[in-house]
Length: 284
Image (cartoon, rainbow, N blue to C red):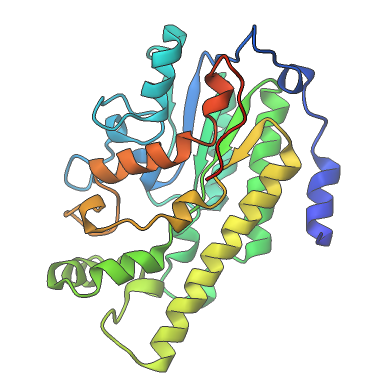
């Protein structure tokens, strides 16, 4: 355990009795859900040219083709109908998370999904990537805000996808490389995509390691939060997505198929929260 992790554990208050003591007779049912995070949760480029497409969000989207967390929850209980709030902002970093979480609390969200961190690594220069310790503190502060404002609420934390995988599946595509270059998309990972020099290989590995560090921080903070938080166990980070899951408008963000894949891979971690048999979540 690191010194910082000890601080996180010490400062998070006790888990509400309602979470630890839920019974099969009284399955938990949120009334309001909110998505917080960055462009992925906002559905950016999933159904239009450089626009938020919240209907196609893996989290709070209402398009049936995506089968988001929201749509899956409606299958269990229609209390949530039209109480899906998407507060995710394209380009957001961990520095913006607390503000989004405050809005989730103000909207009285009972269930919050969190996916953020790609933009902490996708900067113009490696030296500008958010340090893991800073990232972890920001996530812990945001979750503390949620617990203070919504003590009976629950939060799902998704791992950040492997952006080196994006480089691997797109580097041989002339069109993808063109979009990356013109849009200056994630230069830390995607600049000079065809280079095989030792320096560029090492750069990509360092950026991937930073993302892995962020995901380890997410796991620590969520574990410290207690049973009212679930982490996906790096399911998204390990997911071997293809170009079929990537928007052809920027070759970076998930398209509708990618959003559906994210929803499928992540809902497994929280399914038992919403099922009456209260079986443990399946291993990911």
